[in-house]
Structures are given as C-alpha cells and as structure tokens.
Amino acid sequence: MARLYDSRKRVLVTGGAGFLGSHLCDRLLDQGHEVLCVDNLFTGTKRNIDHLHNNPRFEFMRHDVTFPLFVEVDEIYNLACPASPVHYQHDPVQTTKTSVHGAINMLGLAKRLKCKIFQASTSEVYGDPTIHPQTEDYWGNVNPVGPRSCYDEGKRCAETLFFDYHRQMGLEIKVARIFNTYGPRMHPADGRVVSNFIMQALTGDPITIFGDGTQTRSFCYVDDLIEGFIRLMETGADVTGPVNLGNPNEFSMNELAREVQALVGAETPVSFKELPEDDPKQRQPDITLARTLLGWEPKVQLKEGLHATIRYFRDLQAEGET
Ligand code: NAD
Ligand code: UDP
Ligand code: UDP
Image 1 (cartoon, rainbow, N blue to C red):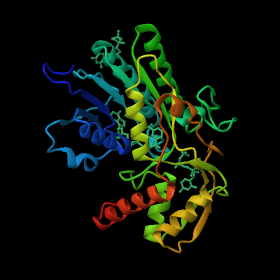
Image 2 (cartoon, protein in one colour):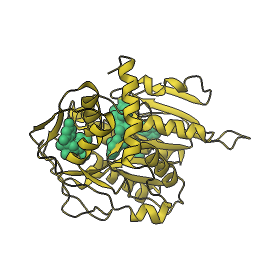
Image 3 (cartoon, protein in one colour):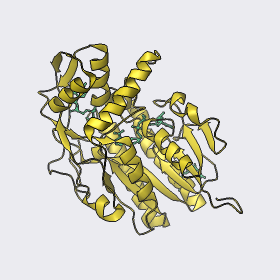
Image 4 (tube, protein in one colour):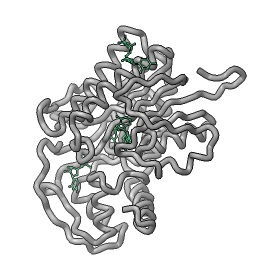
C-alpha cells in the first residue's frame, strides 16, 4: 500500500537476487519505486544486488516462498524458481514446491492485499512443441514424468493457480511466458547454453554441443525482456495473459557456437555430446500478442547482447568469481 502523500509504489520481487530478478529490481528502482527483494539465495547471489544496498528504497529479505509471507506491498512480481535444467534438477521436489506452494503463498498474499500479481511463467509449458512458432493458445506437449517435468509441470500448475485465483477471487493477474533469455548476471555455471559456450570460449575448453547442434532456440536479451515485464504489469485489469515474451530470431546451437567463438576471438574446438532427454528440438515465440497488447518487441540483436554478456563473464573471471 502506497504511503500517504506518496505516489510511489512498494513492489515485491520474489527471486530478486537472481539473474532476471536483479535486473527487474534495478528497473523498478530507476522508476522511483520501493523494492522489497525476497530470495532464499538458492541460485541467486548477493553479488547481483550488492550495488543496491545503499539505496534507501531497496530492501532484501532472505525467505523461501514455499513458506507464507506476510508483508505490505502494492504489486508483486513472482520470479522465485530455479530456471536452468542443472539447477532445477538438483532438487526436483523443491522445484515443484517452489512453483506450486510459492504461487499459492504469493497469490494468498495478493488476495489479502488486493494487489496485482505477475507470474514469470515459461516457454517450457509448451514442452517439446508440435506447432511452430508457439502461440499462447497452444496447450503444449509436456512429458509429466520426465526429468524436466518438475519445472514444466510446476510452472503449468502455477499458471492454473493464477487463473483460478483470477476467476474465483477476482485477482488481477499478469502471466508472462518467458522464452530463453541471456545477459549479464546469468550464473556462469548454470549449464545453460549461452553461459556454457561463453565460459568455454573464455577458458579455452571445448565448446560442448549437445546432439548435432541443429536444434534451435530464440534468445532474448535481458533488457528487452524486463521492458516487456513492466509493460505487461502496466496493462489494464482486462489483460491477464498468458503473453509470450521472447525474441523471435531463431538460431541453431551450431550458429550460436560460431557467433560466440567469433566474438571471443577464440579458436576453441567443438565437442559433440549426447542430447539430454526431452530436449526440445525447436523453440520460437510468436510474439504477435505482445506486439499488439504491449506495443513491445525486442530491440537488441544477438551479437550486441552476446558482446555485453561476454564482457560481464570476462569481469567475473578477472575477479576470480567463476
Ligand atoms: P535465477 O535462478 O537466476 O533466479 C531465480 C531466483 O529465485 C534465484 O535468485 C533463487 O535464489 C530464487 N529462488 C529459488 N527458489 C526460491 C524459493 N523457494 N524461495 C525464494 N527464492 C527462491 O533464474 P532466472 O533466469 O532469473 O529466472 C527467473 C524466473 O524467470 C524463474 O521463475 C524462471 O522460471 C523464469 N524464466 C526464466 C527464463 C530465462 O531464460 N532466464 C526463461 C523462462 C522463465
Ligand atoms: N498467505 C501468505 N501471506 C498472506 C496471506 C496468505 O503467505 O498475506 C498464504 C497463506 O499462508 C495460505 C496461502 O497464502 O497458505 C493461500 O492463501 P488463501 O487465502 O488463498 O488460502 P487459505 O489461507 O484460505 O488456505
Ligand atoms: N546445449 C548445448 N550445449 C551446452 C548446453 C546446452 O548444446 O553446453 C543445448 C541444449 O541441449 C538445448 C539448447 O542448447 O538444446 C538450450 O539449452 P538451455 O539449457 O540453455 O535451455 P533450454 O533447453 O531450457 O531451452
């Protein structure tokens, strides 16, 4: 609840010490809001929010969203959840609990406060898609019992909860389906393709391409994505989502490897490894809805975004943080 005589909002960001969450905290603070960052530091780090500690409008609370949370805020962004396969498969039961119990607690909080709530959902709700590109009305092709299911089904159930709280309790919800995003503050050891390829090129280790490298992904730069979050949150109550947010420019893993090698300037060898189970072959967002509803589309080209990300990883390396 905004203070008397004060139009600025108090915004809760769960997962605020993570990659995307820390950029969102930055953006909200830049807009003049107060930010309450809630994170259990499972995959996030204090390093991502170190620069915010002297800001009197920023507050950090170490807390696990699978437990109830009683705070007073005007808006909630629910991002808490490990996002990379290595991280979310480390403790799959906790991953599902984070998505499901975390959603219930944050929805309960939003219900008590009568405030709007944003959910960081994912393109993984489409599973290994049988239609291409994916539109929001596609129901997906998800294995319910595989190694990725804790994440995919957890996020699907969270979407169900968001829509049932909306229908049953009249909650104002905003559900974003996020496609692969990269940029500074990605975890260097999260096992995701962008961080792996860059770290391998920087250290001279072979670039590990899973499968034959012809599978595709569409990579969105973090600044573009955060702009999409803010625009979605600012829509009227009639807009609930789900809305795809991602960059429709699709690349194969072979193309990505070549781009990273060229930008790092390294003659790193390539090593082909087995394709992980249930690895989607192709993924590309259809962002027609985001373009229409939010007037949003990504602006940062892959080369430019990779350049900024490589610079970040080089700095981490120089500080001995990798
Ligand atoms: P991240 O791992 O960097 O951030 C997640 C944050 O949540 C971390 O700081 C972690 O410590 C925190 N967290 C995890 N479990 C928690 C719990 N039980 N209680 C409190 N905090 C907890 O990942 P990210 O890439 O920043 O992803 C943020 C959100 O966006 C996630 O919900 C993820 O599923 C979603 N998403 C990300 C991408 C992407 O490409 N980065 C794509 C689709 C969806
Ligand atoms: N909750 C919370 N903070 C609040 C209000 C609720 O964490 O400010 C939690 C509460 O502990 C409950 C969940 O949100 O487990 C769902 O709340 P809701 O009111 O929808 O359900 P109920 O409490 O009736 O089970
Ligand atoms: N991948 C790869 N080498 C790596 C890491 C990942 O070729 O070192 C592949 C992976 O098999 C997948 C794609 O890159 O096809 C994207 O993987 P990531 O884990 O980044 O994201 P997701 O599979 O969740 O889209």
